[in-house]
Length: 391
Image: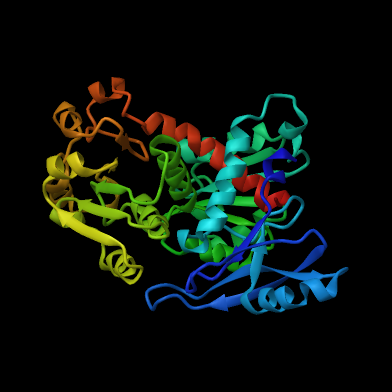
């Protein structure tokens, strides 16, 4: 289909190596294998599907290239081929070339018309949304994405209370049961690492829709897509991450993805009790990303292309409400912040918001957070299409 017909480039799929780009000859077919590489000590070892190409016709022409591909594990984004990932669990799974290819599919998803053949590409597929924590945008956008592509949905909104989890059923048993009813599971859980546990035993794709304070990869994908659509570039940008950086899974995943682009500078602006954790700072440093902590939101906003605001997450403080009250309301995006922002810059927010962005900001064209939510629909349509039917 059109969503993938223009995607026919190859690249290495090893984050620990500098990517190389090469063209895929027409006379190749591919088979799949898996390799494993180990991230730094604070990350888990992860297996990713890799494409291998075997030249079938002109062996003399392709022999040298074939050996290089087989050695390096190159993947290709051509129509009808399998998606490189079995599950979407964390931001570290993606390299720049996969991100660019996903964004191309998302752009095509923006143009799908109702009742067109493209709107039925997931007809006959069933997605289960299994949410152990509250959600509005993530759950509804995944369900909307599935239905807009002709698929069906099984859903539970509060699995922590209204599923067999309330009776003591383990996550693993729930996953083994639900996979028998569906072709893909979108999981939100209150424990970090829950999505990886689910993927380890599931025979259908698992999409991490947020695992406690861990990660939220589909949100990070839509955030980067939003930046590209709004700012027009991803290399050489300055991004201010503001608010609850210790508990915010969205900013953690976003930091991982921003590290894949050149000459990016990231500012961390947060109350002391919710500063960005050292594992993210160490990762950015290891990737050569320039980052800085600041207590001056006005100064940061004046320099940044993106001010990414987040709410202080009361639910992560447990009984320490005194710390929550200490952090809440310290950094607010209001008219004073808009006055110092550059004309091309945007304000983003994963939503929901409380009082960290004042309502009068909404009328400013630089307020991109509701457009950001809409972009999320197209990214999730792209992910579902790729996971279930491929490129």
